[in-house]
Image (cartoon, rainbow, N blue to C red; front, side, top):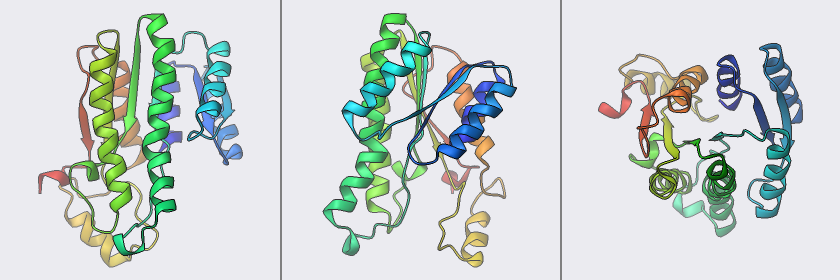
Length: 228
């Protein structure tokens, strides 16, 4: 999903600072593909749950890209966390990546954007922030936090910076999902299919390039599944 978002923004003429943690090869590929689209691109490694690492990353990014005016928070972990098997360490790890990292990056990016006098922040949430999923306790709570983080930041950073949330529905099935379960889920989606990363990239691009009067909003890109 992150690759699709990055390349869609590159196609729209935006320079890219690509974050990665362990997937350096994938980051290299995105950087090269972005450059082929005619924009500047560079990769930056950081552990996003570490405040000092995030600050160091943004120092490097803003040195190379002083006009940084867009942040897309898309890092996430996704796996089942049923209550009877959820321990404190797992809870912390999910909330750290899915929520704390978004806050750390948004806070640091906002400092730079305020100095510029403009900016757009888009957080990747999930429809589970409004419709909890059984067996995904920590994940659902983390994404509900992303929705509230979005709204709070939109208030605090107005009027110069707009903050919005794109909430994907089913884009990637859980590894343990059977074909029967996949068929069942598809039948619940009015669009008749699961989402594609490009669907999410297009939604992000709407917020990034769209009207400044739109802020604090939650856009469910779920093929209409939330209507049922």
